[in-house]
Image (cartoon, rainbow, N blue to C red; front, side, top):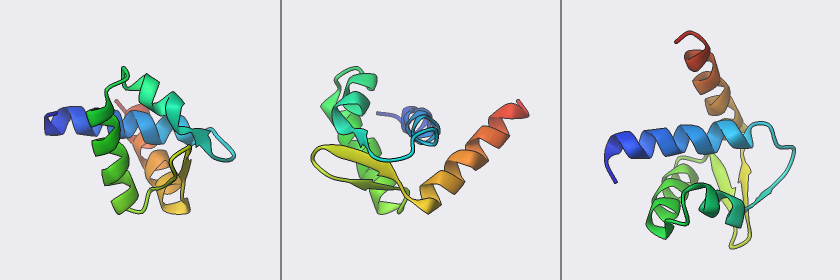
Length: 80
């Protein structure tokens, strides 16, 4: 995965989860990444280490920091 692919997938992950009020099924995220386990592991791993998501074997949930980052991405995209 290129850095550009990672950024696109990260933006998609964060801006999708920002509309949730709780944890999302991890399987939905995996399927959204085309059932690409490597992409899922890289993106969720980076997001987790950055403190943007909490991750369990079954769920993915935005942290307050992740929600703020998603709002920044949305604001930047609105200006594009």
